Image (tube, rainbow, N blue to C red; front, side, top):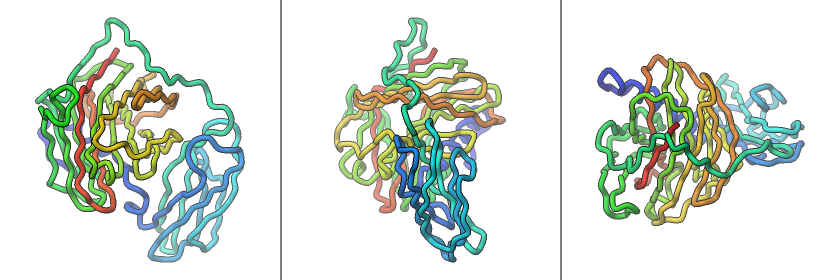
Length: 345
């Protein structure tokens, strides 16, 4: 565990640990590695072919397909591949596969969000904040309450070669960006956090710009963007990541400590270009939070996705954070952020 001084810093430590979980592909994390090749997240027919492969140092001796965290299919077939069709009802479902080997170890694939039939209404348009909303602008330029850490980002490997530098005039949109840097072995992650005082706000409109140079744009595995709030012994970890390696956006299921792959595409961003990310999210009650609307470079996506919090002993606080995840090549990555604004009400 990272050694930090007592007080508000402790909140950051717990957020670090919970924000990461599945940023790495399954191949990098489990003694049994599972890849779910079909279906893909997003809209699907009611009958879907679940095709998965597994790798282990010993024979794979069993498989389970889970739908909405319940067993939909089980087999004790000795095989490192699984191919089975499951029937889903109309609506939204979580789907993943798990494989066991003869030594009793198991691995789990990524969790997919599957939509069958017409989705529930959702808005792809950002709301207009009320006149009494609190607005924090140019947050990348603040010098207090920023921290960075590799160990607490929980990648496969840690590094000491990371840093961030404010007040960069190139590249920059405003004339003063903040540069983030991570360099380590393959599958190393680094987290960069801005912590703020406690707030009882329940609506959050987070608006910022991101820039990757050509090398980073070609090699970064994922860029994570999290907004979190600790309130009354509960952690609302409203995390998201553009998983360039998978080509989709992921959202964080805090209670189950996992990323969920959505059908919203996130191909590799054009290099040496500023990209605009806007998230509208809510704390909808004392135990749940909701992803409402994501807008990327002017294109809106409606999520309407609700998750449950996890308990925490840490004192009330809130924050925003960016995480850089290196890929299997371990090539160093840079990210610049600019015009960072958070509106709460």
